[in-house]
Amino acid sequence: MTLEPQDVLVSMREDLQRALKKAPEDRRWVMVIDLRKCVGCHACTVACVAENKLPPGVVYRPVLEQERGTYPNVSRMFVPRPCMQCDNPPCTKVCPVTATYKNAEGVVVVDYQQCIGCRACIVACPYGARTTDFGYTYTEELPVLDGAIVGRDTADDYERAANYEYGKEYARTDHRASPIGNARKCHFCLHRIHEGELPACTTTCIGRATLYGDANDPDSLVSELINLPNVIRLKEELGTEPRVYYLV
Image 1: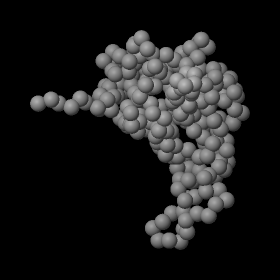
Image 2: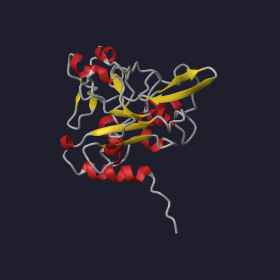
Image 3: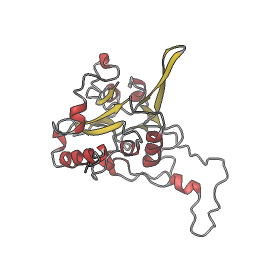
């Protein structure tokens, strides 16, 4: 009897469980995106928006489209672009209040309580991976569900409900409270990782084109992939040392 091959999600979850037993400074979280498998469905983008309850104008993981070849031999390539989680990030150096920094695991994070919304980090990022939260909602100036209906919240209530980035609760009930006014970015779904779950974009990818794990674990899937000859990183010439790798 032939057994079906194990889904890479199972392998990555096993890798994740091993990594979480190590000290934070001994992990090196990386993401590998296989451009040969990405079909441009944008499921990862939608999953990220839902997971982090992102408002209009804030997208952590857009999927860029690139045309390749010349007529009549033309094709399209889809390039998901999360935060590169650089080992040498330009964004941390320009922050005047140290609100954006590398945590113990080497992931670039934003302290919403410390951020003053100057947007210097947005300008400094060579990947365009940062956005500003202006406090908008999708239901602004639109009719919403009748809140008087028993058992139904209004659509606006849903948008104002809290998210749990970085393992903390951030409700959008006050236009003066974080994360409104702050710089925001992909954070490798740390709130999920620390609970033993893979990033939302990874689990949602229909083509298993997004892989995640600890590159310091020689037995992990990502450790194997980043050593393949067809792996690249974006704008390596800038010396940013990104932790997002692409298979081409």
